[in-house]
Amino acid sequence: MNRIFLIIITVLMSFQLLAANTKGQYIQPNNLSPKVRIETSMGNVVIELDRHRAKITVDNFLGYVTRGQYDKTLIHRVEEGYLIQGGGFMTNYTDVEPDKPIFNESGNGLKNKEGTIAMAKQLNDAHSATNQFFINLNDNSNLDPGSSWGYAVFGEVIEGYDILETIAQVEVGFSNELGYTTVPKKMITIYRVVILDEEE
Image (cartoon, rainbow, N blue to C red; front, side, top):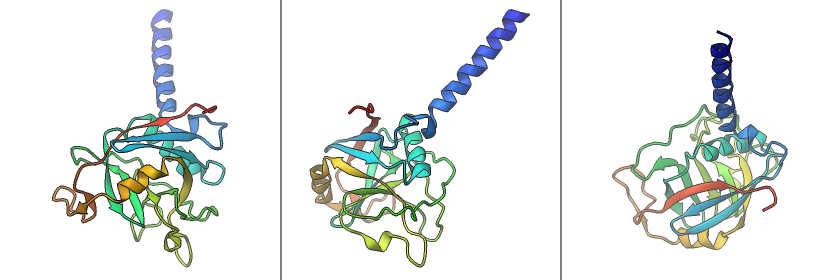
C-alpha cells in the first residue's frame, strides 16, 4: 500500500514539474535579459528580452516558446517600414492555441522603436494580448501609450536585423485562408524559437 502511495506521489510531482517547466517564470528565473533565437525560412534573428521592465510579457512569451507553440508558425503580416507580425497561425493556417490574455505593460517606459519586439492585441481591448507578437521596422511612436493604452514592448533585436529587412521587402497580398491583405505571397515559416543559454 505504501509503495502504491509513493508511486502516485512521484507521478503527481512529475506532472507538477512538467507543468512548471512550461511556464515562462520558471525559465532562467534569475535572468533579467534572456535571449531567444527565432529561426525562420529566411534566416535567424536573436532577440534580447527585458524581464526587468516587462516581466509579465516576457514570462508569457517564454511560456509559448518552451512549449514549442511558435514552432512551424507563419509570419502572417508584413508591412515594409512599419512592422512584421507572427505567432498566431500554424503553417496549415490553424490558430496557435492561446493562453489567457495578459496585463498590458505598455507603460513600462519601453518605446516602439525600430528593432523592438512588442505584443499584438485587439485594437479596442487593452489587456487582450496572448500569443501574437510583432517587430517594429521603424520608430512607431503611434503604438506607444498616450491618452490610451499602447502596445507593450518587451525586448529588442540584437542579431539578424538584416533578415527582417529582407523579409520586409517580400511581396504581400490578400490571403483567402486568413482574410488579411498584408500576408506574404510566398509562405515565410518560423521553424522554431529557441531559448539561448545564459552565457550566449
